[in-house]
Length: 424
Length: 71
Image (cartoon, rainbow over all chains, first blue to last red; front, side, top):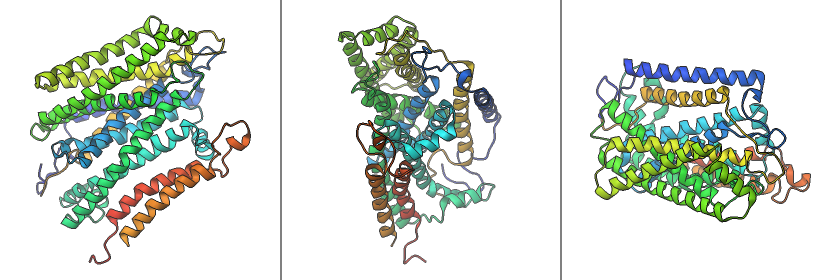
């Protein structure tokens, strides 16, 4: 979409009734989340369902950590797709690069806020982590690489990638002109400036790919390195986290691209070729994750370890069975649909959006199952079997985070183009 | 100048990460004593993050800093 003389592209600055309504809904969720978190701050974590393992027969990591892992996963695909577009010169995917970058930044912010919600004294926890964290601990990696380093890298990538558009938009008089000038920071759309950006973004993309592999593997190590915790300890946690991150993030991106395509009438720019590429990539990640999942079950089924068997029983037939089977079905249905579309070569956006939603249901379920059952049912100590149910406070905070994510995305889309702007 | 500065930031960033990780944070090893639990320099993890940020900021410097011969 070319920049017109007075009109900014992609509905920037133009407020419609539908947008206001969506914003209001997101705002209600966000305020509700803020209220729920205020209850936790006032009365302490006793208002949550989280309790100690063993003597209190509970789980100190619950819904918050499950969603921290989920948000981190969503962030993976966004920046991975954006970096791959740059590294492999996938020009036809450029229309979704910006929205993928924004999705990554917002998901990382939500992940960071999820960590803050989880710890009882967030200020003290963060200071102590920055002061005392041990390099051997995966928490060191989670904070330094997965959240702070990755977020900083994603912000730099988004900022530099948006400079050219900011410079173009700064030519249009309006209320955001000052903001665009600041973002453009003196950018002149000359061949030299373009070449310089190409070079810088290439090296940035090259640096981000290994960083995100390390970041998501580290998150897997938080669980996978815990020797005394059946269900967690294993070599597949790190690659499994990476694969599931790809599944949830790509699912999100498909849904997001379809919504923006519809809202902004971008049928030409975000054409079926874009969805075909995303669909095939989602197919690969889903197939890899399903393979990891089956390998993990088989290993648990064949192991003579009582604690592993107890945990597996809770998943297959016990109190977590409904989440487990819901997650499995929510993975297998999209897998069949994606294979079908790949085999026939006929891609339908509606089915892809359905698959994108379902894999995210599966991702949330699987994240919950990774985090919680190993604490309530996976102890090697002679403790009684525990239980965990999130309270309205935890559910409220998580809904608030989702509302905040939607709110941030909608606000960004109203002040900056969600797709690269064409020539003036 | 622009290239030199941004390259220096990359080198400095990676050096800061390596030094803070291996030499300033708690020593790698089984934490059987406080010597393996406490950092040798408080806020060594923060220095590691500064190192990561420095590497990425090099890209911003590379793009934003004007050329010597630019008007």
